[in-house]
Image 1 (cartoon, rainbow, N blue to C red):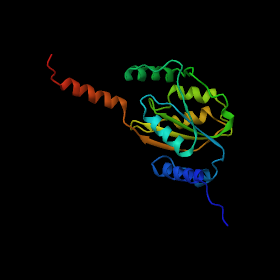
Image 2 (cartoon, helix red, strand yellow):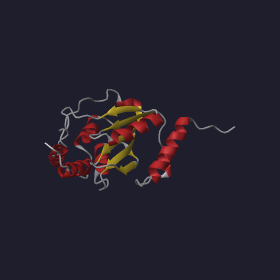
Image 3 (tube, rainbow, N blue to C red):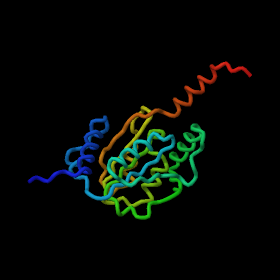
Image 4 (cartoon, rainbow, N blue to C red):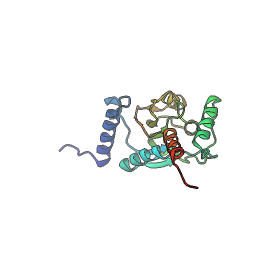
Length: 196
């Protein structure tokens, strides 16, 4: 009698097929077959919540542990201030201190790394996460959201910061861009005639 695949194996195969079909760089069949058994971590950084939704969905589907990457000093509430700060930090190679670090990353075999593209690259907090954790020998699968301009150099950033890991090209999608939303709401408010 042939072995019946487990629910987890079916979910992983289904996810990898959808990641490949979703327009991301292809996951080779060899890479898909070589994803290791063992604990899964879904580590994510999200400012507006779009990436948090993707990370949560993957965590629930694969029964992986969820970890939020948070800088010790929160991002400014104002979107444009955040953009300015991120550009300055990226330009000078700054890796901001994190609020928390995983105590035992060694227990995970696969790490789904979810983050948005900021200024055509990975956000500084993601660089901090990668620098703070030994990901040697682990399989890293990026889950990336962006505002329409693509992945920039984000995969190079991940590869550079996790040289001893197996980087599998993962999932990317265009998500609603916060800048566009703010500008549209501002324009709409400017057009309103409010009696005072």
